[in-house]
Image (cartoon, rainbow, N blue to C red; front, side, top):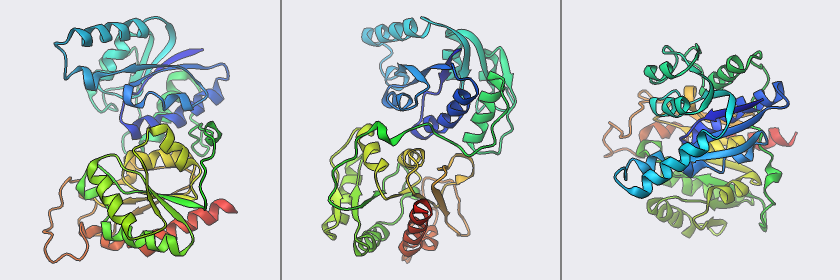
Length: 344
């Protein structure tokens, strides 16, 4: 059986789809999968053994250059790739109008969420089979149900399995055990205070761990430099491609991160992971995995789901103030508990 999966973005959403793919492969041993995904995330599906071919789409880039002849040439090439195979099933795992358009162009029985389940209800008009999956559950569980209904097997009840083997990458050379701190995020309100990262780095050093500090933006690089300048056990990484960063996380003793796509990568690699949530809610799209510990702020306005804190910064010893309930000692203790549980 050959199917096409459409899940184009974002980083966390792509990883949310992998457990459903593992379920499908276990239920249908001869399953072969092609996957349409945004070009920035094209390597991720290849980490799963069920995926044969990745079809990159560049809609984020194309829409900025729709008048360009080069853009239209790339779009024609994408269409040629998309329509080259007659699929037994085309599963739109995104539930958006843009993904439904891709599903409509592909060849095969189209399956996706119905109008009461999809994020954009109009997307359901593109599907031949429309599946009801109740809202209110985590995205991973919803996708597992969607795949099961589309492909005709009972929804598994077992623990989620992302289907990634860390032996896909060779172990990095590190002088001593290390932890990775994922300190960057796109929202200011998702950022755990820098003073806390500083203190956490000191705690890790006292426990004989090196600390690796990745970064993606200039702001994150400068923050990493400030933290590392105070601690001999901390290393600011070069700007790395996702695959290389995944390799480092795969062999870390633990990963501690905020609500960011890279925390989902750590969860999928089954590294002992602590994910810190303040302004955002982990219930529906949070980091999830067999070795993940979620820490959510216990504060009167959390989760506010806002990109900007409504509380004035003045006179706040910790900012955003919701993180005052998640201090470095609490976070480190949670990480060590996860590490200890894994070692047993």
